[in-house]
Length: 419
Ligand code: AMP
Image (cartoon, rainbow, N blue to C red; front, side, top):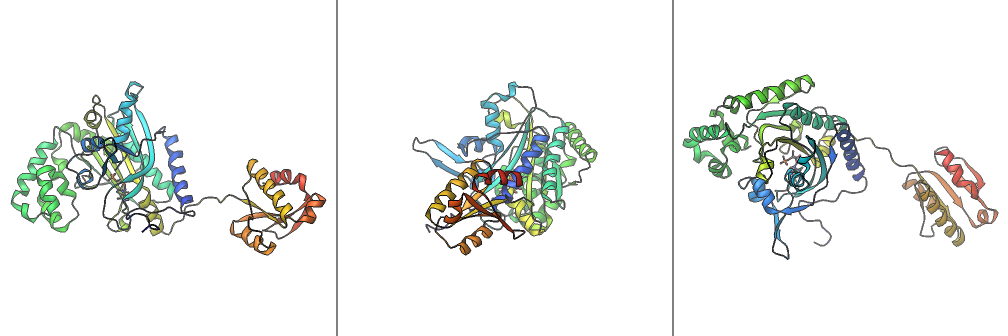
């Protein structure tokens, strides 16, 4: 047990980390171009923040939160998503008082007590972006464009963008009642989750993946025919802006998403080749959320992308992220004084911005050359007691296979000129 990570969590090992940080860098660079600024919020928040914003009746709040009492008897929760915390920070730091919109992005671990399977973890990582303060459909299109550009930069261009409108507090209640009226006679055919959704949030029945529920919902009319005129217009405008930006999309009238705060636009990016956990990211508009969290009415729109799923999708496509390995110098030494001088030398190189490594185990020269290969050294410096006495060092080029003796005092300059 001690040597095993908790169920649903995993280590990201050296070799994998490079891919993670490459994706982070792609996202950071894109966000800079789109003028979104990074925010880092705490890993845990007051439980109430999530129960109020994500919604008491959602699976996330009802079943999946890591909630605990701290020693001061406060109820805290490991964040299951990033939007609520960003809204909280937006209010706490009075960002609404600045010129709007406020455009933010984040990256970090999220926690949900989900049933672990391929692409589904209890600790997973999301990168996300949120824009507050503008109800313009242009910003819905911008946020979708940012998400799609990220996938594009990662080399995923076979994804499908599904989009829908989930209406607003004016038109949604009527549609909810309509669903209840139609499904009343089929209540017993619904899965246990949907039977309770029938009471709490019948819209969620529409995107239940269970076959029986899917069949039953075929008779439910599309939400797009039940929107108020504001929502119809907003949806049309978003679609037109997507066309303008040449972003392909598919309207999916059954798309609802698992968080209660969405209004108007809801979207999801799926990789149809991925099996059951095929959603790589999703988001939407949440014009009531800031108010729910205690602020004054402020529109907002955002998305979150699951990094584990992005990597899974890349793996499925047999695509490799390209990143450059740092070239490295290996200092091979023979004998205790050469080893001490070697330690001084690697430190000098490192302090001058050159990645360097040495042996710490008194290995033979042959073993040290193997080690140099393992760390991917392009050049090896060889320092024996004899060279040390002469004030020389051997510089070996691993690719060309040639070597020459140079002045020990000049080695830093020579390497600097070379690199
Ligand atoms: P959500 O916050 O539910 O809208 O999810 C946004 C994205 O986060 C999804 O599309 C997934 O890529 C990812 N995600 C959500 N839950 C998990 C999980 N349990 N494990 C891995 N990724 C997840």
